[in-house]
Image (cartoon, rainbow, N blue to C red; front, top):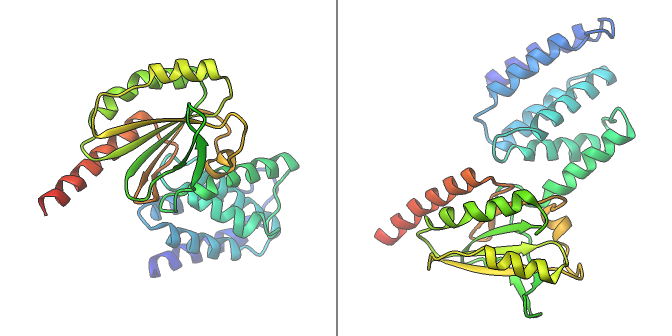
Length: 270
């Protein structure tokens, strides 16, 4: 932790110096230091990052500088392409923005921050997967996911062009699964005819994968809030009841499947 304390001291000195500058370009040097700080923390665990950023924001004595630093960190991790780092942005929102310690620059910015936290908070990597009860094509009910099986949750809308494209890519990805897995294809719309048509298009011949089609035509579940499905497609990977992958693209889903294949093979050998 000593090297992080040194970085914090250097940043703290820079924060005080920056606070004396004119408004024009006052944070350019600080933003450069923050970029270095992100890089220094890249391989650290999420709790370590959260603690370091809390200490950094707390070291800002000038309210405008504190606002800039907190919102810059929030935006950096909000748009991060590293899996799981959204948790840092959620922490910054919960600890600093939602509590009023740092105020967004506008009502719209606050609305966007609240929406981000709402979409991501319950599906962070390592958290228990929210349990849903949805309708089957025949009108029955099914609760998902099971805690004793791996599962993929694929939220789609039949009218979504990207969703349709992914139905062509999914069979080849699912063909690589070497472990028991449930694949939940979940229609977030309410058109029965389109639901039936989409079910015909999305299939797999892999006997390790159980394809399960579900939907929520009467909005009886809380899937929008629980999984933040405000747009489609959305793909989540669940392993032993916990979120292993979230908002996945086809290539990242394939990587996780290959990883679990290795673990499953090792368990069978043991």
